[in-house]
Amino acid sequence: MSIRQGLLALLEQEPMYGYQLRAEFESRTGATWPLNVGQVYTTLSRLERDGLLEAAGQDDDGHAVYRITPAGRDEVRAWFATPVSRETPPRDELAIKLAMAVTVPGVDVRAVVQGQRTSTIRALQDYTRLKADAAEPAADSDLAWLLVLESLIFAAEAEVRWLDHCEARLARVAGDRRESATPLNDGSLTDVTTNEEVRR
Amino acid sequence: MSIRQGLLALLEQEPMYGYQLRAEFESRTGATWPLNVGQVYTTLSRLERDGLLEAAGQDDDGHAVYRITPAGRDEVRAWFATPVSRETPPRDELAIKLAMAVTVPGVDVRAVVQGQRTSTIRALQDYTRLKADAAEPAADSDLAWLLVLESLIFAAEAEVRWLDHCEARLARVAGDRRESATPLNDGSLTDVTTNEEVRR
DNA sequence: AGTGCCATGTAAGGAGTTACATGATTCG
DNA sequence: CGAATCATGTAACTCCTTACATGGCACT
Image (cartoon, rainbow over all chains, first blue to last red):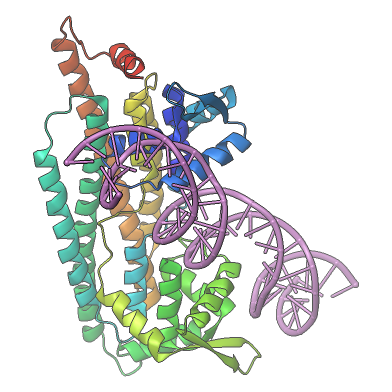
């Protein structure tokens, strides 16, 4: 969905052809999300079918150029005016993995958390290095890429914080369960599972 | 991809049938990512085709039960052992939108940032309310959901921080450009557009 | 002459969504 | 009895990825 909108926004600026669109998209996002050329063409076809674009013949070099329509401009305006909804956030593989790790017996959750933490820290270091190498943004596309890069940094930092938080909470829960052991419910994994069965 | 792995992990615990898998998945993630039943069945078919699952006949109530295979267990182990790669992070619609907003002329970037900030803050408040309502985690599935919820909170907080950072940087860039105005290139949006036109 | 990039596609398949079809069971 | 929910699917479609086909053009 974001590709569709992104390409449309690029064409709001000026008519372009397929390959050029990929190049512009990648230069503005620092090639953070490599974009397959084939997908550009299929997306352009759908956008044309939906009346948001129209084929504008060929340019001086013989490239098949697309032009945005008034309906397309409306779409772009609406896109920028409407915040990205966090009501149904995109599925987060890491969150799903941890949710499964704590509920499926026999998984070493601490190891999963630690492994991820190491990996995310490494990614964070790579990002930081990239940012250090980047000069002051001269062109708009430099600024755009810098913002994208910083969004990755902020997200990775949040992920590390969350992982640390998970570890703390896991330690606390393990402690609680050990302390609150009673004849009726010693808090072991087996008993919890039993409670689940009963509740259901 | 995460659905596939998640369902497989659930079946590592015990054999289950389609509807049950959806229920278990949603109870462990607090229905954060509603899961379509139809998708469960198609995913199960593919998992069976790939030899990670096998049909285990019917249970006492006549449900079509699936059982994990040794290959499936290996897959689950590998999933937990391998960190989620942040090399090619999932496309972030918001980051793409802002990258386009700062490069396409005629877009009120500040308004986009502010609109998103308001929306994200609201989402954050909803999450916080949900967390306050949640009791201490008794069952493992409660703990899992709490962790998922907290991951959403951490991510939303990071998003707000990033948006504030964007605004600060935009203000700074605007100031720089106004100061460093020269006869050759004053860095205004209009000039940039002209340069683009000329390049074409 | 060959290698590699530009350029425009098509094909096949995975993953996901919405919607529909079809029965059984359960509950008011 | 009727409505809702459980349960198992199928169909159509979007989006995305990987891979392949084809042709031009440029550089060594």
